[in-house]
Each structure stands twice: as C-alpha cells, then as structure tokens.
Length: 521
Image (tube, rainbow, N blue to C red; front, side):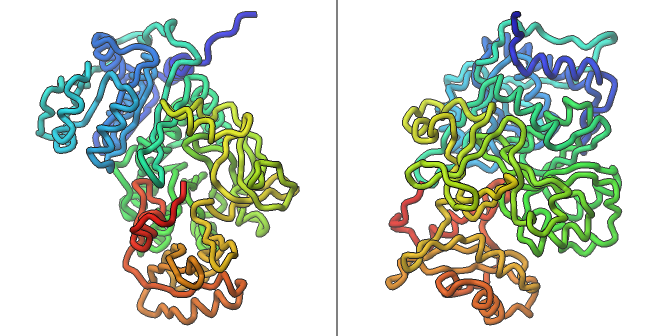
C-alpha cells in the first residue's frame, strides 16, 4: 500500500483547517486566529517562492520573539524549506558564519537587527532573497520590506500545494555551541520534525484548551513547544523575554495553563516578592529542562505551584525529548534526582569508555536511539561519524539507569572534574551546596592546581549577606567524600549564562584556563 510523505505541511494544514476560527497567538503586539496566521504566512510563502526558494532550501530567521517569528516559521513549513534559526544574542560574526555554512538562499530579519545586518553586509551581499519585517523605524539596506498585515479571506483556509515536499527534505539546521571551533549545524529532516512534533504532543500531554506562555528564545527549544501547541489547537502567548514580575502577571491575568522554563527562571519566580500573592492556579504543567534543578529548589517549586512540574531532558541532536520525569514521579523522593524515563521513539543505553553497554546502576555515557535523531552535522562528516555508535547518538552526558528505566545524570562529560586522579561530578557538589538556604545559585568547576591538577571550586551567588562560606564547606564535608569537597568557595554577584539561560561553565572556566590547556569537546 502506498505511504504518504511525513511532511510538516500536511500536519499543519490539517490542524489549521480544523481550528481555523480559534485564537492561535497572543502577545503585546495583538491577537490573531489560526486563519489569520495562515493568511500572513501565505504572503511570506509567496514572496519566498517568487524569489526561487523551494523545498529543502535553507532560510535564515533573524527574528525576535514575536508573532512574526511564528508567521515566518509557518511560511517555511508551507514551502517545505529548511529553517535556520538565528538567536538574537549571537555575535554578527556567528550569524555570518551560520548563514554561509547552512547554504542559505534567503534571510528574513527584523529591522531592529540593523546594526548586526550592517556588520555582515558584505558576507550576505550575494544572498538571493533578503526580506525585512519592520519592528522599529530602522531600515535594512538591500532588504525588501514585507507587509504582513494580510487579513484572512472569507471561506476555507488557503493552503499551498505540498506535492514537491518529501519526508527526506532538510527541514531544520540549528547550530549548537562547541567548546572549541565553530558551532555545529545539526540537521533534521521533515520526517524527523514530523515525528518529534507528535512526541511533544503526547509526552507533554498538550490539550486543545492549553494556553502556552513562551518567554524563552523561539530560535531554540521554545519553537517546538509552540508548534506542538498549535497542532493540538491550543493558544500561545509570546513574550519578548523573561522578567519575573511580568511572567507572574501573565500567569494570573491570562490564565496560562502551560509554560516552559529553565531552572534559573523558576528560581527567579520563587524568589520574587510577588510570588506568594500571585494566583497561579491555572497552571497545569510547568515544563523545565536545559540544566539540572537542585532538590531543594524542586521541593520549593512543588510547594509553591503544586504537582505541575514536568522535567524534560533532550539535546539539539534529539530535540527536547529524550526522557521526561512525570508529575507523579516528582512526588516520589527516589525519583526527584532523575530526569525521567525514555519517551516515545527513544531507546537508551549507557556505555563505557570503549562504547560497550553497561548494566543497570553503572555510570557511563548516555547514548540514544530515536526516530528523530539528527540526520547529520551539516557539511561535517567527521563529527557525524564521531557522534554515533551504530544507530545510537552519543550525548556527552554521564549517567546511569535504574531497574525501572529512570535515567540519572551525574554530569556533562566535559564538566566532570578530575582532582587528584579522582572523578568529581560537579552537579553532585552543587546539589549539596544548594541545600544551604542562604544560597541563591551555585556553579562548580575545576580550576588549575599544581597539586590536584584541578581544584574543585564553587562559585556562589548568595541570597543575602547572611551567607557564610564556612557553613557551606562544612555541609560539603558532612555529605561528600573528602576529594569532592571544594578547595574554595567564591562569592560572586553573577554566574555567566548561555543565551538560553543555562549556567555557562565554559565561560566560567575560561577565566582560569586562558591558555587553552584544558581541552574538552
């Protein structure tokens, strides 16, 4: 029997036709329906197609968190083009590299990016299609301004023919930071993202009446949450960024039911003076991930928001969903330090340094087999071959499985500290220090030491001036083996964060390993 192609255009067409008159998106810019969203996307689709952009062709999106980002995303889905999301925190040099490396035929940019666009003007001079969306009064030299004020026509939704799109066409090249050299372009196909969208709907339990709050960058994980919510007929509020008071207000006023945050954002909500007075009863699911949450903070979050937390563990190579820790498992002490069990389409194997599978309970590198793992690293066969053992992607994360299939991560391989010949997992030390109620945030790294090779060092942002490093150190001595106890605790005003809100240990280490002696991949 013939099988239809697994393409995003078909998936979204069916959803948009079904939910045409429902409200799809809301933001400070306004509110639009599914039908209006598709009409705006069709304008951009037609402009790209007229410029010669077709199925599988790469298109860079240099757009802020906004309704326009979703419009552009949907236009690429209609066209079957390959999205290259560009984070607005990237340096101009990185943007130029990603546009060139991806082989992009088009770039769509908000006018507010005029300084960065000007900085890369020479490198994009020959780009066939350059489209500007006005979000301020600046102009992008050499770009055609697109008017997205199109209204939906009466009658059924108009959706372009998708017969030229295949399951194996490139659909996404998303760049992931490396510790050395240029970022890697992670390539996913139409089929990958089709199955990944289904996994998001099932694994996160998204419902037709869900109202998603997005306050993390759309060019990263958040875009997949938006897609899954729209496919289920839900509604999405798009916020430009995260600000604790603003998020608390939106939860209460808009009656938000689901949101995604990194742990740092949850900490900011918990510590905000308005948190206790905010009505957050509408929240049914608070998804978190991207970095570990400490047990102490997790307990505080459950006490404040209820049994709504759902943890995800994933990577750019296996987008967002490798495992989930269910809401019920968050209430079981033994599972609170786990990142959950494998989701649909995923198998897990823990491997030793030689790549051999390890039994339950033994620590090694996490490997993943999934129907939506990356096809390859774009234009990088060497890194692609290094990423796989057979059908399994090597994650670079260190952990173990228990007899129920729950995965416990102990560290990133690159963040593991080798002190005096012993392996020290930084997250284990961080969890102990975070139990001290005067600690707001902590990051642990190894710094050069003549005796130890690497000295375990903790960087702490205190909650107040009552913080006492001696108490934190004694807590570590009481709970950890001697070689794991920090040689020093340094009080700092801030810990560097990545553009996605995760503690940036690479940046923290760079202050001490400036000569590049500590080489990690």
